[in-house]
Image (cartoon, rainbow, N blue to C red):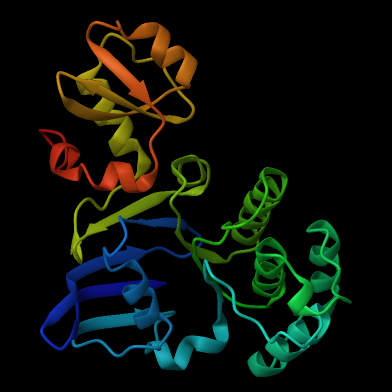
Length: 280
């Protein structure tokens, strides 16, 4: 579905992406993580055909990115729309640019997201602008969803609806590339994860790698499950799959402290946790 081999993207003397390899399998939800400035958005723009690669090979749906654009739905973290159009007129315009639409799906999703498409964009909050993009993306008859911080500005109830829409899309045979700063969202949705830092690949692997790493570091408690918790053990960072309460209760205060991390917190400490466990 997505094949990236040795991708390099330079802007003058600055290398934004440095020999990146990534695979996204058909029908998967693939997480794409990294701190600010890691090269995620640059990579996504190459996949969308907005940037041309300096070097390397990129194929999307088996095609050059420019040839695949009509089969891709894209939602950025900061949605900019035509201010004087209504929400419905924006949906009409986006469908017209794509050349295909599912009007019934648009109507259903607009109702689910509690989006009043009769209002003009200039009256929308950030969250409502995000909803317009999400409705357009999920309703479109496309094969690939590229979602770059898509839940920015959404309230928790809409976050739950977003996750349901992603699962429905995958059930319908679509593929999702998800860039998110919410570790819980990544854990709940993603089958596999690629992490980059400073334009370079850090750890391409499934969520099970994190669980395996935790099992090695905290053998005392192999039963934990649920949300990510960041544990500091002897000044080393371990990303633990476990409920905050259970992790706090099961790790002695004299040996560890706990916080709930964001993706950026984790990625900025990847020099500690990068690399597969021994024997892999």
